[in-house]
Length: 418
Image 1 (cartoon, rainbow, N blue to C red):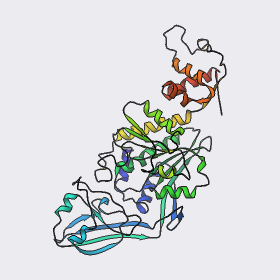
Image 2 (image 1 turned 120 degrees about the horizontal axis):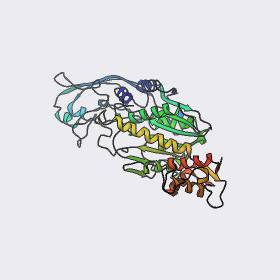
Image 3 (image 1 turned 90 degrees about the horizontal axis):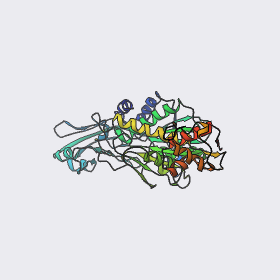
Image 4 (image 1 turned 180 degrees about the vertical axis):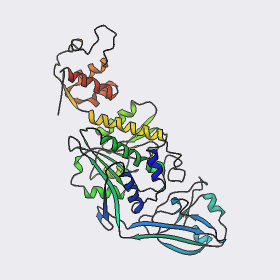
């Protein structure tokens, strides 16, 4: 996963353009993405797919003939969606098009101007303060013309048509945690699920932020009721504790599954209520859809100092953190896959578990299955409580409760409900 992050890091991505296409092509080497294109000008609800933006080069040359800023050094130096520009400007005129961070003087900010025609350069505050008087030459060799919005989609069919949606955004340039980490973890989760037999179908979306999710929802509005659970992944490669933002519904199975998984793992975590601010969960949870889609991050949006700056580089995202994030997602999937209701077919008092090999013959011995879990599953398996309900009530890990249910099914004491 870290190797994929490093491979994608140099590419200049935006909400449209060749950087997105190249990113999706490289992801498609790992999983069979369907790459889809939607023409500029297409109406998608209240929005319109914008013109396509591509950039070849950009620089600022100072009065002494030396380049002050060069796009070749970092794609963060140019404000995304900057219009083609060639001009000579005074220092004061140039300053109205410069962006920096006074409180982080050595870092270059990430800035965009998707829906208003403008141009700009980003640099460190220290470099900006060092610019002297005189005439500066500005060149931005870019295109802004009718083209397409591009996104990737992968459906992994399961035993049912009910879907779990996993989405990440692909519109950021050289920012490793936001959101190359999400792309990498989503890619390897998809690769894992392609090797297993699943009850749910899994749909993965690699979309430009906001406009990409809106475009997908517009094209699939007649079928979104197949989405029964969903997660938006972002900022998931650093070492911060996990943060889960509930869906707008607040009590969907995905909300309970993620909260339960995090609660039974070592270390701190945070579960927060839905808010209409953040990543694309706010599109999937808009009132016209209200899909059960939450957001999983480590450091949440805007709450780590490297956010949207040049410090969000490959040193921030570590292989061990990516591996842990993938492990958490696999556990969440295991809960979703295994959560179902059972019926105790021998409900009149406790059945004799020892006679069925589920209790040790000598008191205090370990028969291999958690005895407390066995009793909880038997007691609450009335056809209305799911295994996740039972695990939450008992305060036990889901895997422990599921192992108990599997053992009880094997000896004929439980029957699965539809």
